[in-house]
Amino acid sequence: MKTILNLLPLIQEERARFTAAAPDCRHLFRPVEQVTPRASSGTEEDYAAAHVILGCPPEGRLACSGNLEWLQLWSAGADRYLAPGVLPAGVTLTTAVGAYGPAVSEHLLAMLLALYKRLPDYRDRQHSQLWADAGPAFSLLGQTVLVGGTGDIGVHFARLARALGAGRVLGLRRSGGRPAEGFDETCGLEALDRLLPQADAVALVLPHTPETAGLMTRARLLAMKPGAVLLNAGRGTAVDCAALAEVLHAGHLLGAGLDVTDPEPLPPGHPLWTAPGALITPHVAGGYGHMAVTLARIKALFLDNLSRYAQGLPLRNQAR
Image: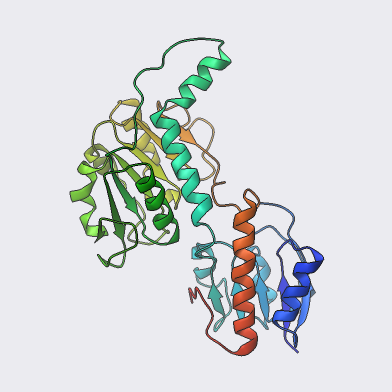
């Protein structure tokens, strides 16, 4: 009998649904209560018995998972588990791509509008009990928006930008210029240098790959349109954060909204903390513990894949 180790926080009714999806398996429910990714739950014996793990266990816990056939992550990114030696040979790895579109895209939009309307400046003035104008505000109406990453999150953000009147929404994808829903134009990453000077807002939701690491260099940050806004909720490694701090201090950009940084966490004393126009959140845009709709989408995806596994059908979102 196959053993399923389930790390999701589930109520009794939900546990019954998972059990029914794979009725011939033994189900071990070991919920991770912390929001922190890859938080530890379950015993060494649980991991040794597991043929399937549903969740994001600490990479080191997988060393004793000799029976493991399939690991289903609740994260969209899989790079930590694709590193050599983390997963035993032959283990299928699937992700939660498709679960985070609403949460992350709304977070990006909130950051963009906060910067456009100078809300962080007004909050600072409020704390100082200062009734004072912070200067011109801006609108998405008629703006050109460039989105790096045209998957689930990028498509959701494109829809939101379009709904608020963006004039053009351009997309960049690693796999070339195939059309994507909600975009006026989609191009490969090689078009970045051509499109950067046209964009009023640049939103990055790219995974960490050799092509995306260090993508936004100092030269590219300076090539952005003066007064533009940079957003990043993909991987912090896509942006040279030291160079971004310099560019913000120089006043070239209106601001930058970052949910991810490099390094991460951003260390005390890093110049980005105090850079003008920097709005930073600690990698919380997509955490399943922050938005109930995200956790519901993850559970639905897990249930569907578990049913496929039980029936011998191909699994969705395979990363390996």
